[in-house]
Image 1: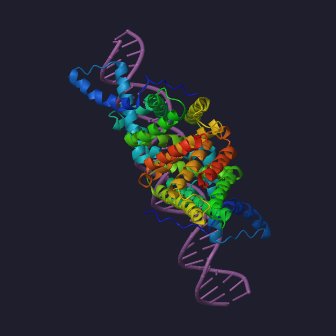
Image 2: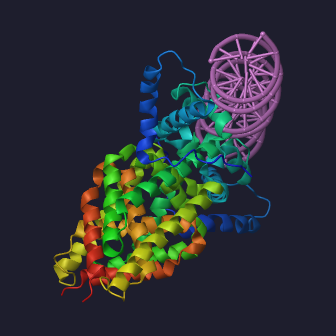
Image 3: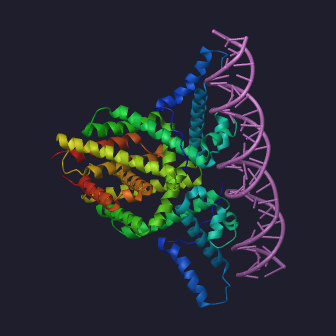
Length: 234
Length: 234
DNA sequence: ATTTACTTGTCGATGACAAGCAAGTGAGGC
DNA sequence: GCCTCACTTGCTTGTCATCGACAAGTAAAT
């Protein structure tokens, strides 16, 4: 239905801000010659609009975020966001896609080649670290995640697919651990994986609603201990 | 700011449909005399509009749900929902309030006078039962819950307060259990309560995204077993 | 010269509100 | 006790600013 234009390259979490930061120095390197490649122009405007959309979503929610505001905050006309993305839903879809690809890549970096128990713990630490270090980023990402449950479009299907992937990743780690003998074979891998995701989503939800009432580190540490207790072969 | 008109009586989950169902028989009792009290008129139109809004939210999400559609599906003009609630946000706020009061009352009925371990298990069963038996109702309720994280208004504050209440209820049960000696004193009541809520919210979230991929009973049963294992005094 | 990035013009739909209409209410006269 | 008439309240219609969406046009790169 909506032929989504593919993401330009695999952006990492850090790239998002880097594009904007390196953009200004670039104009200093070649002071007046503002003759950018077409690809550079779209990459820049895309990055600026993503950043603007992210800010606006965190500031006033998706409902109050208008395409006009996105375009203008990014430094362009009121029509660019509409023209580039086609629709508000498509912009949010692109953002979700952007977040997901960035996040899965960063997660893969953090987990590395680990498997079994260590992979589970590393993933939990990765989520916890990013919640505190990239707070705004994660906020916008999860606002979009939580909101897309009420729209029956492509975004939701993508989300469902991502959930499946996360769950099966975790389940795979557990199975590795069982094969290694470090995890009790009685543990139901898929069931743990589901609970793992429930914990993360549920915790982030409560954190988003009232950040000051949630001690993220305490909760994550508790879940790590619970995980070790659950896996223990006794 | 927005002087919310108080809820008319404490509506239970069942009342929502009952109001609509008893409304028609009533006109049969006094066939032509459609002379309703003013209070009856607003109660009826309120109930009809809540029902309509709930349906529309489940069918097409909050974003696509218009005040015009709410009024008209409820059997009135396009302007009534707007006139009655003042704004779309206020309507959703009223709905959230309505859901929360109904739900807490129903939960209290299910848990009864139980405390300790039994209260925790009963609450888990209550949530599970309602997810399957009042599926649409819970769907609309949680869509609104998850969505209101991106709106910085009264609704979110109400939610935060409700979360606090839920968490402290659970924590209280655990403390009762510890006092009774049926729960291991090493268990951190607040920490368990938070994990309890995380499980429920996270599970419902994953269920909303892809109902067919989630075996609710299996996950709830698993969490009940995990709870028993966590509480066990060994 | 042609393609591509971006802007401006415009239309139907929506939320919000004001003004008006209709249904319900209550006090006084018969 | 019931009618009537002024008053209150529920509900509808009219209207406007704004938004999403798209078409047409302009500026920039190839």
